[in-house]
Image (tube, rainbow, N blue to C red; front, side):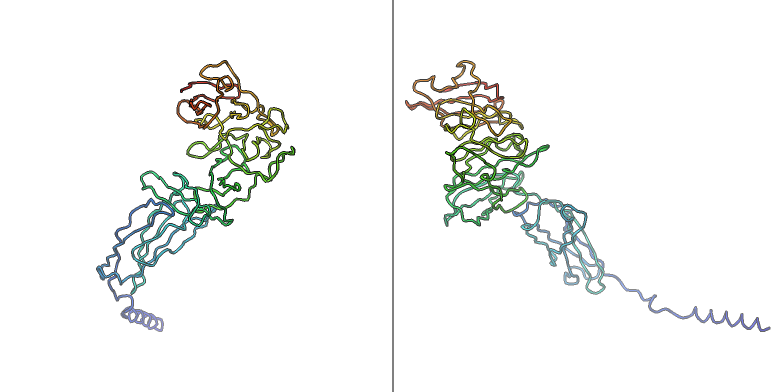
Length: 408
């Protein structure tokens, strides 16, 4: 009998418990859901030139077009350079984004937009891709003196499907150099070659030459640590340091700005021309503008070098000897200690290599290498009678100087 009463008591207790209403669980309320419009799947922008502008419309199922019902946040997501860690950076707390791309490196980023309901704290999110390109991959530099007399560098950006844009005052001229004369770029080392020490943008002034840092992803140009005088070791007494670098050949090749020669460099200075082999690091011995190795009897070279401009590799470079009025070549390209030698002469052809064959003697006024016409080079010559001539030729190799045309 006692067992029956216990069972009835337990059943009654359960029945009483099931009749209690849970007011918290049964209370229902509508949620102010956000609809986000105006954000595209991806954006394609130029660093340092353009802003990322994204106007957004947020509509609540309860609040309608009342934009004050939500708090807003934009953040940028990117991996750390060279790693896998994601870095989130808040870039705005406004509903409509206006983000200047002045402090962002070229690359691909994720952009997230969040609308947080102020009453319920529920978050609604939408994301897109941002592809940032550098404005410095296509265009040219403007180099000269600014109003205060110091050297300045601007860049004219000429990207495809973008308006031409001038980016002013890129050069951090911390040394206050003045009197701009020339600006040239050596090119990048390329695949399979160790980095060359003189791989830089060079600013030449009346007083000196200065290697500058260069990167298509950076918005500023600064002075580099490299100094040619620390790589040149002339032993002849006529050469006195410091040496002013006027040009370095071969120049850059193609859209990748690759060095044409991965094995040798030709450096023209205010006192002499030096040849450097890159087989065992970059270093320069005695001047190469002589006809006997190590001789102090230097000849004057015109400030132009001739080589095929349509090739990614240069095996030989020709020069014009102003002292002896003739086209010449480097005798040995495997050693830093080398000298000039006569270019291969196969008779007059389109023209003589030795300009003393003409009366009056002809001399080089200007030289240039072209990509067209099978990599031909062009030389503008003149004589004492005031007549001008154009030579067209191809400096194919150390053994092939192909004369193509001579025009009066």
